[in-house]
Structures are given as C-alpha cells and as structure tokens.
Image (cartoon, rainbow, N blue to C red):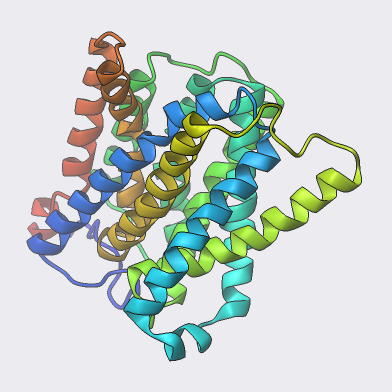
Length: 314
C-alpha cells in the first residue's frame, strides 16, 4: 500500500484531519502569501534609503509594538508570562531574526528575482526537515508535488536559473532553511499559545537578535540609520512591510502549518511572485502570462501532493 502523504499520526503540527482542515489550511496559506507579497514593493522603496540592518530592526520593532497588546488580550497576562521564553529566544532569534536579515541582505546585494527563485526550493527544504523530524511519510504523489512546485516557482519568477550566484544566493538559501525550521518549530513548540501568540513571541526573539546586530553595526561604524528624513511615504511602506507583510502574514502561515505541516504550506511560497505581479499591476505594471502559468502549476502541485486516492489503494 502506498504511504500516506499526510503528516505522520501523532504529529503535533497537525491540528485536525480531513477535508475541512486541508481547505482551511490552504486558505490560510493563500492569505499568508498575499499579505507577504505586499512587502516586496514596500521593501524596494525602503531599501533605497535604509541600510538592511536598520530596516530589519524597524520592521520587527513596529510589529512587536502592535502585536504584544493584541497577544495580551487574546491569551491573557498569565499565559504570556508562563510561555516558553527561552525557547522563543532561540527560535525567534535564529529562525526569524537571523533568517530575516539574511533575506534582506540577499535582496540588497542581488535582486528580487534571484531571491525568489531560491525561495522556490522552500518545499524541498521543508520536506527534508519534516522527514528528518519523523513528522511526514513520503509518498510518490507528495514527492512529485514537491518537484512540480519547484518547477512552477521557477516559471513564476520568469527564469530557469538565478541571474546571479555567490554571496547573495548563499544568504537566500540559508534564510529559506532558517524560515522553514522556525515555522515548524513555532507551530510545534508553543501549543499553549494562540496563533497570534506564537508569531509574537518569536518576533520578540527576532527583535532581540535585531538589537544585537544594530548595536554591532553602530559599534563598528557601519551605516545603521536611514540616509533621508523619515516621511509619510516611508511610514506607510514600513506599516505594510512590518504589520501586513510580516505580522499578519506570519500569523496566517503558522496557522496553516498547524493544519497542513510546514512542507505543504511552503508550496504556496512559490505563488508569491504571481501575487507580487498582481499587486504591481494595480500600481501600473503590465500582466505577465509566464508568472500566471507558474502560479497555476504550483496550485496543481498543492492539489497533487494532498491527493489521498493513492493512500486508499492496497
């Protein structure tokens, strides 16, 4: 009998089983990618005048300032105080914090296309993590879904190979691996917290890492402040980049991981270039049929990887 593509039984990441869980998990992943995609145009504007470490710290600081009061209202002060803070410092500091700064630097030294192409390997990275952790059993359909998802991601970015390799590509690979690990750990290691709480506590860990890196940049005489005065345009872009593209997106993504597992949820990352294109169309850019095709292929991969018919055959 073919092995099931679903997360292994007993997996803490799987909140519930059945069609409703898969439907809601995929819906949450789509919402996560839509909100995440909104950050790419905002980042392009901000990186023109902000050093990566300053943008990294400001993004996390704003997200934490807004999300902590919401978390307190949802989970209550006692649950917040009794949370696994030391674990959050590790997951948030290295998975969210270090992963985020590596991605920002990768985009700064290369280009968004190179970063997006490398991010299309996220399903493969996430699958390897779940197989290593013993939380997923591999099937033909799931393995084929991973490969199709990667192909779709490459097509959606309008390229078949990175335009630039080297340091930027290495940073993007490391960032993708850290983000997948952090997402899996966040959904698994804080079961007593709400989805908002899980995202917020790891963001606080990321902010600690950002503070350390910002202090180090100042100590060594590196640029750590924006080169122009902070104006309303930058404020608006920062709100989109911090609260929508990171805060709201991460809440949706962690909720999706809880229903589907990090590997299936990460398939949706490959559709992000298509969502970015749609947003840019609203801002005046032209339609790109190649990226639309890539997005359709990724959607097919998501359906294929979750096909349960093979698991019913003996």
